Image (tube, rainbow, N blue to C red; front, side):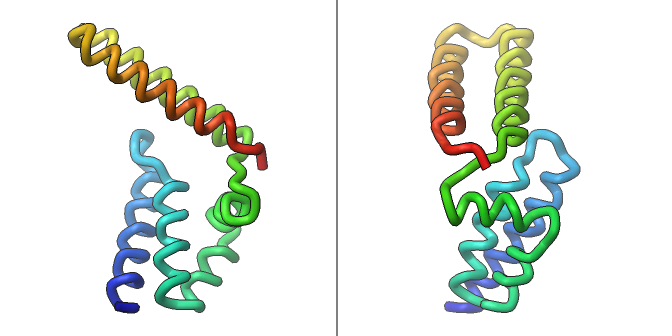
Length: 117
C-alpha cells in the first residue's frame, strides 16, 4: 500500500509543478495532497516536501493552523473572478451561470473564512 501512496504523492507533485506554470491548474492543493500521500508512504519524501523553500511553508501553514496566505486568498479570488467573467463573456445560459456563481461563492467563503498565514 505504501507504493500506492508514494505513487499518488509523486503524481500530485507532478501536477502541482505543472500548475506552477499553467494559471488554471492549482499548485498548493496538489502539494497538500502530495504531503498527505507522502505522510502515509515515506517519511523521507514527506520531510523533503515540508522542507522545500517554495512549497513547504504553505503546506506547514495548512497542516498547523488550517491557514491560507493573504496572497493566496487574493490570487484565488482574482482567478475566480476571471473564470466567472469568461463564462459571462461566452454567453453561457443563466442556469449554468447561477450554478457556477453559487459554487464559486461557496469556495470564496471557505477560502476567506480560513485564518491568514
